[in-house]
Image (cartoon, rainbow, N blue to C red):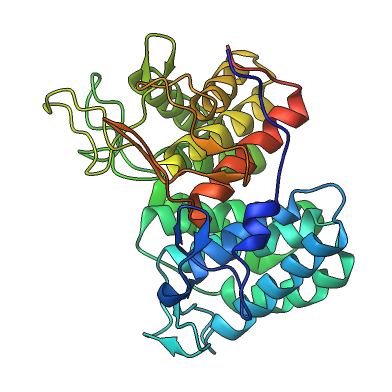
Length: 339
């Protein structure tokens, strides 16, 4: 078994440009020509907000990330997602994934970040963002988790409470069947976030039905995405109940989402079965996966972009690197090794 690595932010820092974190990399070198995206900058802000102490470089990264989100936000509270290398924006603000992830990151800053100088700006951005609603379940799942972070800090925040209730309305869906205990006909991407949001919302609201729905869906998902004792997450293109078995390509975002959700379930229930899911997520990165491949570069600290039938995709983009770092934060918190 490969030793669980310590957190290494060097590659994430190396992806930093004049406006934020570059989205893509060729191996460990930033692909500047592809520019930036709000999705990834929100992920960066989230991982820095979860650090108990921010060294100067990480503090600067958090500050630049929140300034990026401030410039991405439109007057309605939605967010633009694409920014060119020269700093110009493309496209219109939306209520899609970038909005939901931004709300989650900003809420975590308000509730948890050791960079207290950022709390006021995060709160101001949230005042507009929390008024937005989205029909997209994943967007609302991430927004729900951000709303709960705000409520942890300010339990009387009406906008955050109303956003959380609106998210529950979107996420409270019937499972397809007893064999396919999922509210969608296919597993697609960031699947565990849907179950996590139900667990989080049900726990915060004291709604046992919603919490139990989330726990049931997460338990089913963890079973479906475990093979021979290790994670085998749904590949690119998804997975349906009648699909022939297909293992590749697997994305680190799926593994990180599973780690997030299992930690949420453990914190809600105290049941150590959920720490097994977190251990499997850690294990996936250090080689306990379908290909037996280590999914990070120990020399750079970057996470590899995907697990293919021939081994890792050696590019080390922002999304994959943050997925590695957030999962290792849990390994550190619970002193986990892979199982």
